[in-house]
Length: 134
Image 1 (cartoon, rainbow, N blue to C red):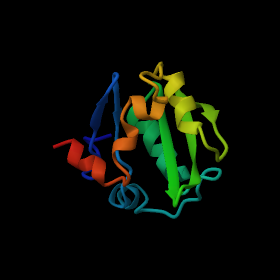
Image 2: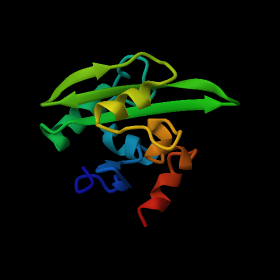
Image 3: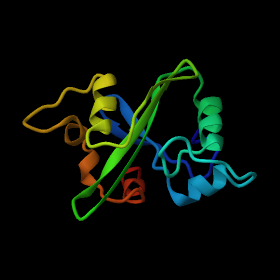
C-alpha cells in the first residue's frame, strides 16, 4: 500500500503490528476517481477504500479502525479482513479497537487495556502518527 500511494506511510507500533494513518490526503488520493458510499457506520471506510485495501494487501489478515471522541464522548468502530473476506464488522461502540487487538493476539499488560498496551493512546490526532514514522 505504501508503495502505491504517496500519502500512505507505515508506522511500526511494535508487537508485530504496523498502522497506516488514514489521513484526509490518503482518503482523497484513494477516492479521487469516483464517489463512494461509506460502509456501515464508518466515516472514512468507503467501498472504494475497501476494494483498494483488499487489492493492495492481498490475503493477509488486517484491520481498519476508526475512533471519534470529543469531551470524553464518542466511540469506535472496526473491521477485520482475512483471505480477502470480512471476518468481523463491528457496530459503533466503546471497546471495538480492543476486540480487534485481542484478535491479533495483543494481551493487556501492566493494568492497561490493549489499546494502551500497544500505545494507540499516545496520539490524539491521525496526523500525529506521521511524526512517529520519521
